[in-house]
Structure formats: structure tokens, C-alpha cells
Image 1: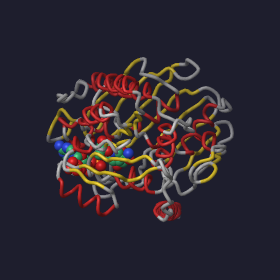
Image 2: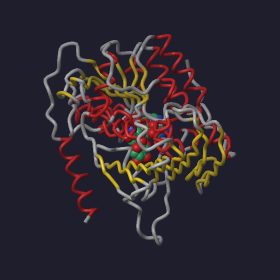
Image 3: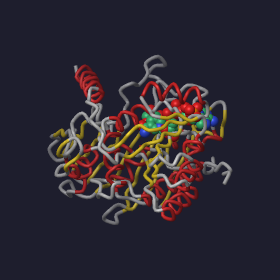
Length: 396
Ligand SMILES: NC(=O)C1=CN([C@@H]2O[C@H](COP(=O)(O)OP(=O)(O)OC[C@H]3O[C@@H](n4cnc5c(N)ncnc54)[C@H](OP(=O)(O)O)[C@@H]3O)[C@@H](O)[C@H]2O)C=CC1
Ligand SMILES: O=C1OC[C@@H](O)[C@H](O)[C@H]1O
């Protein structure tokens, strides 16, 4: 029964978010350019931009002009380009969303900033910490907005969850345990399996580490206690799975032990049942309770935050699809506190536009946090023996 309720909620949320009306665009709306025709584009950028009165789907670029044209026609972009550089050379483009493979994030975000565009950059931010630092420096030099598209952190559920932890009501944090797995697994040939494109489970499933660091208000790990990679069968430089245990310093300065597990090819139950229910999640154990956030990655589809008190065994459940500690009092383009139908990506677009327009966004992923996230990823890869993900050469 629980599964039926979950499936219904999932479908309902999905359908409602796509039924959202397209508003009339305001004068001075941001002209958005998109670099690549990635499969994530409609959910992460097209739909959020369409439903925002201050964004216009202006131009799309692909390595292949025909693909760009086809997408432009389908989503009513005004222009299409057969190369990423051609889009960046268009002075009418105000901001770009970069959804190229991971290994190309640095190159194209860097070029976009240099071309005077604001940048919303897909996760993981870059291939490694060094690139992340250089990219943030470029944003500072150019004075343009640069934001990692770590969409889950913009959703009201993320804020409600952290508010419970931060309240101190359940005592200090003792340990965390998070995971993100793909089941059925990612098909061969996907960008996620390609070493040169900075693939790998710990890069793609970077959310699990992000949930952990967000819960703890942590920077980089104090220590990597263990990091064991399960190599991809076709390229042992790529991690199909990664099990790591880290020590972080939390907000209070206490040391917390955190397990993080990522997997792009999660084994099936008894070899024939994919673990479709295993959505990205994190358990935070405090002195007095166990706090669990189910589907922290895409809480707009379905989520719950449960708090089980150790002394009584009593469990309370919270859900937050709108408002909450950060959006609650904010007058958004969709009404006060956002809308229950808004996806993580739509909340993210709201904040991105606010920042470009000079308004203080309700929430934000600071660039320093994206650097710390990439340096934490480097530390895990180094400890595992695989070494941090390499940079591609950049044509200036
Ligand atoms: N925020 C989220 O929820 C999600 C984020 N992502 C992130 O978005 C990015 C794209 O992921 P995803 O949509 O799955 O990717 P896809 O494989 O669907 O698309 C990647 C796109 O990059 C372009 N590209 C440029 N060079 C290459 C190359 N050498 N090989 C393959 N593609 C290339 C292609 O566009 P073209 O041919 O038009 O140039 C391609 O369509 C990744 O960084 C991923 O981590 C992914 C899924 C969800
Ligand atoms: O960012 C992502 O979100 C959804 C996942 O399925 C995907 O692998 C990852 O790239």
C-alpha cells in the first residue's frame, strides 16, 4: 500500500509541475542560452525557464546544428547554433545553462564567463578542486553570477530537514549515512562511464556527499578513514561504486563520522528485481533521534523526513513542498513561498534569476561550497587509489 501511495504522489507531483501555466514574460527578462542538448535540459532548465516570467528561452547550441534546430523548434527557442562558441558569441545572450558532460563543465563555464554571461553550471561543478577554484576566480574577475545547479538544496524540504537537525532538539549529531544508487544501472556508453569526461559514481552521485556536508554545515573532510572503489568492468579508472567513510567537523565543531555510498550499477535483489525504491537518502543519527530524509535529491516528486526518537520509539513525519524556513516569507514569481508544484529546478531558477537581477535569493549554493565539494571528492578519489579526476586541456 505504501508503494501505491508513493507512486501516486510521484505521478501527481510530476504531472502538476508540467501543467504549470506559461506566464507572460516581463520586459527585461533574462535571455537564456543552453549549451548542449542533454536529456536533463527539459526538466532542469527548459521547463523552469518557461514558467518564470523573467526568463526567455532564447538560444540553444549543440555540436550538431540539426539537433540544436530540432530542440529549438520543439521548445520555441528563438535561435539555434551548431557550436557552443557561436552561442557564446551572441551578445544578446545574458545567461547560460551548461549541461555538457562533467569533464567539459570547466571549459564551457569558463568560456561563458569570459564572454560576459552569467552561468548556471550542472553538477558536479568541475572535474576537480583545482578547476573549481580557478572557475570561481574567473567569476570574481568577470563579476558574473556563477552557480552550481545543485538543485536539491533549493527545495523547501531540504531547508525543513536541516532546520530540524539545527534546532538542537535532538542533541548533537553522532553519525550520518547517505547513499545514491542507480538501479537498474546506467547503460554502457553513457557519459557517466567515461573517464575522459570525468565520469564515475562518486562524480555523478555527488548528491550523497552533498547531503552529508549540507547536514553538517561541513567543509572538506578532516580525514578520509576509508574509500573503496568498485571498478567499472570496462575501465578500471572509473568507479562503478564507491564506499567511503569520512570524518567531518560539524557546525558545532564536533567530529562526526559519515558513511557515503554511491553506485551506478547497483546489484538487483536476488539478481532479478531492480531496487527501484532505493531513492537517494540520508540518515542522520543524533544523540536522541534518527532523522531520515527519503528522496532528498528530488523531493518535489515525493519525499518524507522522519524523526524517530530513541527514548520512545515514536516516529513523526514531515513533508515540505512549499514555503518552509527559507522560502516561507519570500514573495516569489509564483506567489508567496513558491508553489507546491515547483520542482527543485524551478526553485533553483527562481534563486538564479533573483541573484542576476540583484535581489537577495532565498537560498544559494555559495561558490566556496562548490569548491569544498570538489575538494572533498578529490580527497575520496585520492584515498581510493584511483586519483582525482583529470582536467581536460582548455583552448583559450
Ligand atoms: N541536475 C540533475 O538532476 C541532473 C544533472 N545531470 C548533469 O547534467 C550533465 C548532462 O547529463 P545528461 O543529461 O545525462 O547527459 P547527456 O548524455 O544526455 O547529454 C550530454 C550532452 O553533452 C553534449 N556533449 C558534448 N560533448 C559530448 C561528448 N563527448 N559526449 C557526449 N555528449 C557530449 C551533447 O550535446 P550536443 O550533442 O547537443 O552538443 C550531449 O547531449 C552532466 O554533468 C550530469 O552530471 C544529469 C542528470 C540529472
Ligand atoms: O544528477 C543526476 O540526477 C539524476 C540521476 O539519475 C543522474 O544520474 C544524475 O546525473
